[in-house]
Image (cartoon, rainbow, N blue to C red):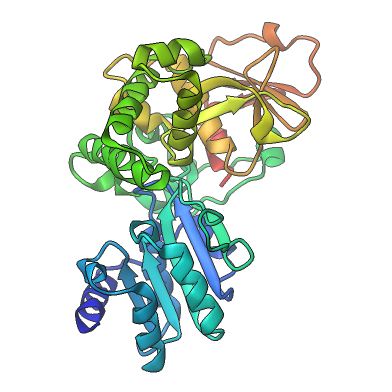
Length: 389
């Protein structure tokens, strides 16, 4: 355990608390068990270390990575038990999905040590309801997406921009510093601003590495896949990256990658849960997951630039941005007559020259335009939707 403590202290010394993600203030940190899930690279580990640095004593707190070689010969439950007997009361576990019996042992820790807190992170495909040990009644689960456009501006340029509700955005209440021009910063964000490691050299390559680890490691662990299935998912992702947005024909795609159409549906589900793609569904009785998949997108615009090999379409980029920003707080559905529906609002997304023709006769309909700084009446600048979280 001494080596784990030493590694933890080193990480804590390097942790910067000058900027903290929006989700931090929405978490009930007093809960006995908390799970923070999200795609690779969005800042889950940093958030745990920031919480410890700002609010915990090192005398009763331990941070560990479940992928550490220590667990090749030691059980997680035994570590927690020893730590508790030595005065430990808060255990932070990073990448818990890398530990095979994680759900069972977390349940045991929770049940046997009622005054012991467990906070863990995992891949976004991590299902806290999966497995023999039911954690659904025990763990509070939170989802952390990548940076919004607002968060990117605050982190990268030291701005102090607040978040706005959808209603505020539609009412033209977004305020932006007069000393800054939003459009060049918006283009910057679209290319490399969704993941907090955007300042690191070789951003695109790092992003491809994240995608590779997700497809070759996280998804196979979650779905108990063999190497052949992993290769099929890679083929599917390539098809998606060259075609998005597209209306999926599961039979045709299955023929292209030589799997049954039902497997295509499973693969798309895994990629969506892992934060690599987003599936736009039709509205079916208000039950989001039962809606028919109308279009498949990559999850965010940075992935388009990393995977589309200079074949990216500006219309696709605009729609992808709108969906990625708005699905965090809203149920976004396809529209029969336009691009998107949120509650009783309809949205048509386009460039500076987009006209009102496609939304004529539709109540509560808006034109979302790229390359404009200001909106008026039912015309909203596209970049404004990056301030929803």
